Length: 289
Image 1 (tube, rainbow, N blue to C red):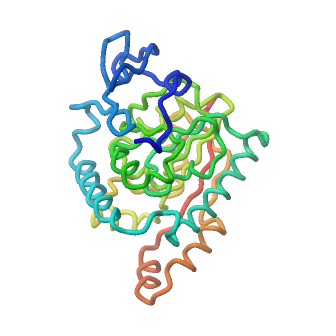
Image 2: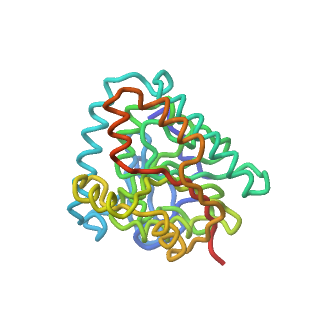
């Protein structure tokens, strides 16, 4: 796809082979090829496909159900307005800019050179981040880049799993996981991968739905497209156990409360929001050690 960031030599230098973990990769014809194990990762529509068939984290019934649900969602949303003209764009812009300001606070006010987003969706948060190299990773990245070329302009799009990030160690300044970790087949492994690719002084932003125990169990039973549900305490333990240290943890930050008030306006939406007993966590973390 012409609007996505070209796989330049500099961008390819960030990549790592997900099979042999080799770093000698290059673009040849219509694929990214590893000179170590000779694996070839096809490039279709400007998106390199690093999905590994038969991987253990892809063989998960709930995850497969969630991906099928997401694929239908992208097929349906394609007929709607482009994100830049969608009212949701305004909210995501506000959220992304507030998150970026907090990132700068934890990164000595230094803008990132490299940024990675997992589960970008129709409006990638990295669209609003002034990084030289931006990577968007999702098993459905091809659909997203195809449907929303405007917002993915200048972003290197990769079809890949968060549990096997095809990037080299310690290369990312700012990683973004916005409301996606609860979709993962193995979130613990995905977090270890995120902290692996993070620079020693890098920062990870994680947004998560947050539940009290009774409501967490209820929603986990009734909504199989979100395989995981965590309380705030469990979120902290999850990050600490998988290579991270928390820099800032906030439940229901003001911008999220404002979004809820403005976005959910009908009586039915208000009631649904009340009955969910759900809050939202904004978490900023660094690599432990």
